[in-house]
Image (tube, rainbow, N blue to C red):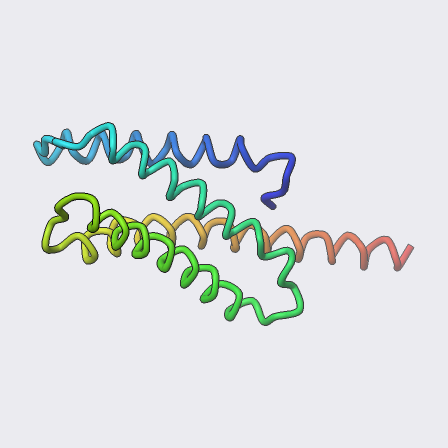
Length: 137
């Protein structure tokens, strides 16, 4: 579970994994990134926002889990698309910028949020089993 004690270490670990994946994928595909520094900074900001959004689920426990997950994704994508929109007023953007950002954020987010929620619910199930076992004693 992401909380205030492990928030920054989680952001840094996820950012590192995503950055290594970005570098490896670009190397394999032979892509040269003309805006390397800007894209790395944006990757960190998106990682921060995504981790912050995921960490908010504990404050929304009275809402059904699926709705929370969809709202978290909507907030993240709204933030990302809003950033692309704002950025487009200060510099030229690629005609496919929105589509590219959609896929560049959606795929890693769905995979990592899936892993997070599976481990979260698994830990809850394990804790409930321990509580039940302790109550029987």
